[in-house]
Length: 296
Length: 100
Image (cartoon, rainbow over all chains, first blue to last red; front, side, top):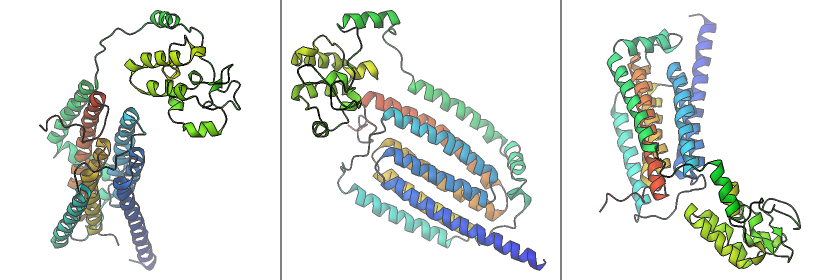
């Protein structure tokens, strides 16, 4: 081997080492964050970081095919599925910090340390040899090599995998399917319901006659009281009542608890909530639907 | 120089992190994510061993693990959706009907 070849090989090894240590540290930190961070969406993002790091590590370890499969299947499909379900279940839902089993975290941490010691001892005692000399099947011929193995030695497991995937798809469809028990309301039904509700016109817009016209600013009625109907229940649920008071229109006590609370509940209670509100606010009588239901 | 032992060590650390996450997290979706982390750690170990032995069988096994994990995630998340629809909660503490 000539002198420049030795230098190039050494430089490649150094680059590989730097990349490995960088990715190892990033993936371990992201993994710890996945366990410690409270919001589920942040957990998903950290899991994506770990998976991408592992994809690059696969490429470093001579598995370019697996690296691409990792990015496409895990980071692309599986993680998107996770995020999809997270959005359905509710992104704002964060883990409760109340321990339902006393001392569970302590014992879980101890069990984790025990497992780490056990695995470290096992791996430490095992003889893990150096890497085999790099051949073409860990480089350019990797895809061909994997394909040859899959379609010769592992062809039966590969076929069984297809059965597994079909079963999984069917199972997901059966589990996630919900039969519609009531007929779908047609446009005619919706129009009829709207007229019957007593207020066929659109609900009042936010910010009218108030200090400013942000979407979370309730419109003021002729008598100066804020109109809860003018703000979407999804927004009034999130805004702090004290903050709104500070920024202008004083919130009326009973009016404030009207659309916000009942609109947040299930659909069965929303009619009742609107009824309560109509009783407490005579100036808005007849507006039969809370705003959140109509808009969102 | 990065040897297969480095990969195995990283896989061990990630596996332990994932298992601790499964033990302490309450949100079922996050528990699932930690299971995925453990599966990924095992895949990394497979790839490391394939590099050590100089053949591609480990990589093929890792590929099969990925396929099975994808199927598992699909069914698991469908179950979670069903549970959430019935109980309005994704916490693992809520689903306790089989306990008593």
